[in-house]
Image 1 (cartoon, rainbow, N blue to C red):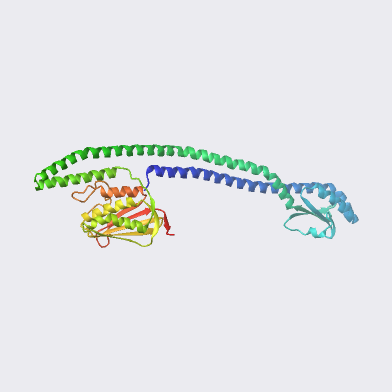
Image 2: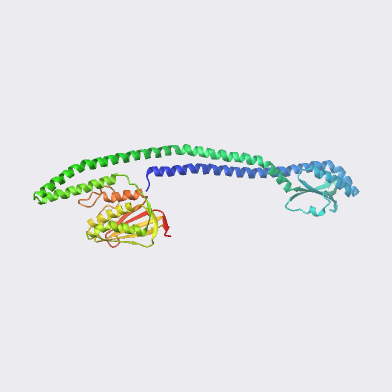
Length: 411
């Protein structure tokens, strides 16, 4: 259980993170798509550029190449394609074959380099004379490595631009998150201020009311004491004494319920917590309510044992009023905390409305105030704990309290 201001603070944190993450993710996606498209488009553009250069240069040298092929002049072909290799971008090599497919020459004079591999893109162009007769074939080897080098060189400016896009997106996300969460932050601060003012007013009101009522109660008790000293001990005087005692208890319960619960947690072992609960229950032994406290694994827990002791005291008092003779408390380690199970052998809840059992001033007792379990619920809420009530499997009342806390093994 958490206060509205705490929930608002958590909501603010989530809202501050999510726009930034969302816009940052969108920006990163846009950058990745941008880079992929750039690389693809640049690659296609470089390949097409090389094709256009090849076609243009082939037309320039076509007449000379036709003559050299007719004369079977390999040296002339070699000289011609060497100049052509230097003129075409990304061109790694050129090979020329005659009309019978026999090798004539290549730009590197290395026939082993003419085997196509993943590093090259190969274009084959048939050669014809002026009459359209097939006279040979040219193979152009375009280097993928050379194209990639050009793309890497050109992509540096794109990377800088994309970094600016990401930074701008993150700044935009930060601005939007602040704008979105400002009303919630303002509400949270205002709610916290109002809560503190309300708590201060309630403290002043509670203490003021307690002091105002304490004086007439003390005066009534003084009069009763005087009458008893004079030998008057009939039923009416004893009834007055009992009623003033109950009134004092009710005032104490009201003050306790109206004050804010302040949790002071410290590290204790389950054994120490069990011993503390036993000490709190010891005074009920004199009233014939036997209490047993059990725990399975002894570990260190970070809890406010005084507040746990207060809850147990209220439950023991209720058990006594319900005619219980025995109460059993089990302390267990659960996920992210500890669990306190309380069972007694009293008359249980009977016809009580279980939905209202922890509401203030709801009670099934003829002389109850209905604040005891309300105080337990307030303490549980302050500890972010969960408290539930039900009838026990073998009769009596059963309470389960799950307290989130840090749990560590004993060293």
